[in-house]
Length: 512
Image (cartoon, rainbow, N blue to C red; front, side, top):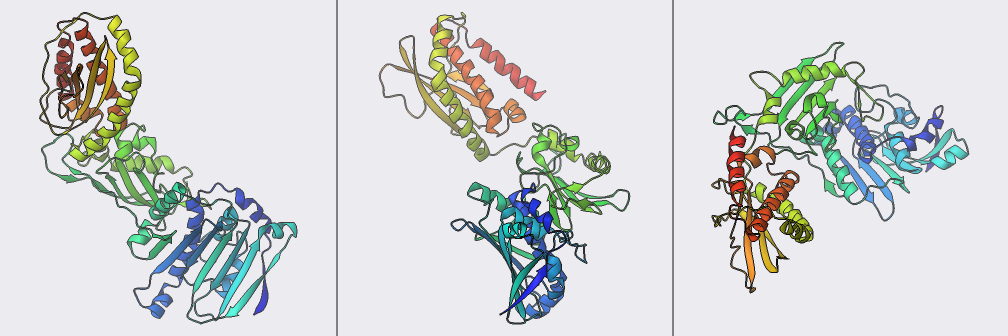
């Protein structure tokens, strides 16, 4: 074993501020993956000569929570002797800046952000020496060190790897946060994963990117027309050698979290990974628009610069031009993708309606159980005289329901609120005697049913299968149904007339 030294001047003082960078955990971990990819691509020919054409870069990120340690291992080309000193000096720009490792800051900034004590052990391809260096940042700053010792040992010439250990980690990804880290890293490196260049393992999970399905449907203004795959290839140039390629599509299933653009540079996502999609209002509209939930895409930017933490594009004055060109591409008369995303209404399947309805129904019944007794009492004591003819609701199996009990006017009631996704039903809201599965076994209990149709044109247009939109409508419908029951108990004779007129009007309005 021999000892050597590396010079970490002249920018060692810069390391002291790196722990205060505005990183997200996935972007910090991505710095290590970037270095591994850059090393692999620089040595790809030699690596495949040594191992065969099916050789694959492997990066393993181990999260050791009990020991508060993160280890990053890769089988790339290692840090070679000629590049070793430069690799550990802050802001020392590499000779080749065309790849993912371009600022000379990635490993140092990410390591310092995570930890005050970290080590790097590396063995370069076609060299016989493994080198290990330890960074004790507190000691470096206190003693104003300008050189660090590293140890070496002789090993097999054909071995090649880099192993980074971060000890006493300050920002440890845990529980749900770790799941989000995995999703972001899979999103950031999707191109390398797709092409089989990279095998990325985080906390014993091999990452895969989940490809969203693209909408195949007729145009919104021709519902019976041909089926169209709503995906548009993008290829346009800007001034000064800037260009954009890729695609934009409409998601088959909307997602408030995962829609939006992913902006790539050199094969890696810079902005828009996982649930942080790039969604400028100029193209996507407000967050409550259908475009905001449906439009997505992958855009590769050539000639653009990035911040040194690689979490943002440096647009300068080009953002407005880029957005205008992109919007023009998506608004062609012969392929109006943005209009389709905003105006197309998909007919959801039974499972979609059931899943979203269960959530909305559960919340609504919970609220009514707590608040209905007092509300009914107050309304009953101040009745509006109306009346109705009692109707029996048509039966359907495509339904979900919940019941709750309430006592008013010295009568026990079992009230069932039902959501139906049967397309054969015509009315939005129905009220009447309602047999759940069998009549109540309790004596002196009156039963009544209130039903809202999820497949009514009004619900399809304005709520779809989003429980957050179904729930307020369901609450209004349930309140209207209860009001009708109260009116009947007050002696009103035509209390259902308002509901029947309401159903007729809302159906006509929804179809217009």
